[in-house]
Amino acid sequence: MGAEQSNLGKEITTLQPTQKSAKGAKTNGLIDKIFNSIKSCGVAASVAVVAVAGATTVAPAPKAQFVHLAVESTQIEYVLSVEELNLQNQYAVVLSASGEDVATIPIEEDGLHENSIEGLKPEWQYTLSFVQTDEMLGRKVLLKETFQTKRNVTPEPPPEPTLVFAVDNVEAVGLDQIKVLFHHQDLDETCTPELVVGYPDGTQQTIALSARDLANGYAQTTLEQSATSISVTPVVNFSTGEEPLKLEPFNFQPEQLLDADVVVNTNYQMLTIYLKGMTNGATRVQISDQNTGEIVYNEYLFGSNLTYYYDTSDEVANFAVCLCSEEGEKVSNDVQFSFNPQFSHSATYTFNYKNPGDVEVTQNDDGTINVTIQTDFQSDDSSVYYQVALGDYRFVSQDATFVAEGLPNETYVLIYHVLVDVNGVTYSLHYVAPSGTVNE
Image (tube, rainbow, N blue to C red; front, side, top):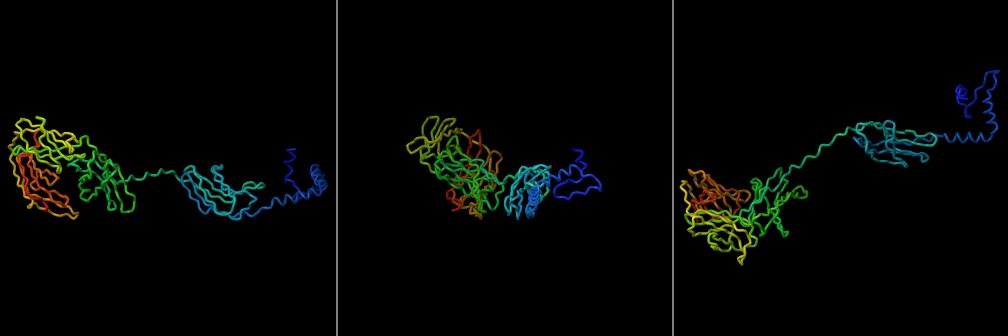
């Protein structure tokens, strides 16, 4: 049967005319059987012919267009516009690659159809098609776009912000007076930096930083209340309307609440003590002679500096200073110091002091002042230097002209010392405390 059918030529159906055989040729037995079968079904065959003819009627294809197609390395986005769908058929958007379907998205109504397909391979060829499927004709491609995905380029990480503003250290420079040392980078004209001091009870104090503070890299302030610890948080405010930037806080909790710098003047038998640290509610300061155990000084606190005239015949004097409450209870540690009451020094030096009224004071645009004093200092001993105290501010120098810049515009008590350090003790070779104040 297979061989016979292969030589029949055109396929014979009820829809095409039969070919006449050659004159005198016998009718093929198989053809007779087919036509006899048709004749026997009569009307039924006619009905079948009409039904088949109706099923093969082809409806117009819908109008379709990809109005947008964005291709990336691992995904695409598209917008398909469709009109005049024949709801008797099925439609879909099909993404394929290498002859295989990757994704199929049904389309069931006219309009714009927006979608994205992810998880694609970079640098890979794909075809995006709009297809129609029906029972008789199968799947028919009505529209297609062939493309290649982009190369997968690893994006460069965004540059790290270069704005830097950080506290490096906090130093006590007086009683409840601190110096905050900081560094910064790329603070432009849109930035207003400040330091926020936080206290254990939740209260805060803001230190506004001037252009001079930023240039110096430090700012000094007096704490609003006594505390055993504080935090200092750098904050940058922006004129552009951005939220303030709060940076890493610096916690300052000294191991000892009290420290002191002591200057010994054996000519006057005088101790000048510069107290530094947290008062912790103290109201009084005590000095005790450690050799005798006697309290030799017990006075109310008046600022960070005090002067005590000692009287001792010991070869080595040993004293201690501490802070106390009104009732005499210690609220700080003892700061102990020793010195040689018979100390003398043979260094030669030149030092010319000025009275407060003769000190040159100039004003700065930022409201601060500069203080200039012509001291003409010089010495044959490189270890000798001088100190100028302007109120609670102390400066040391070996320059012939002393200059202090950017001081608050206030009046200052003026005290001079010519100093030398020996065996860890600071001795005063020359002391002058002229009457009057600077910048009256």
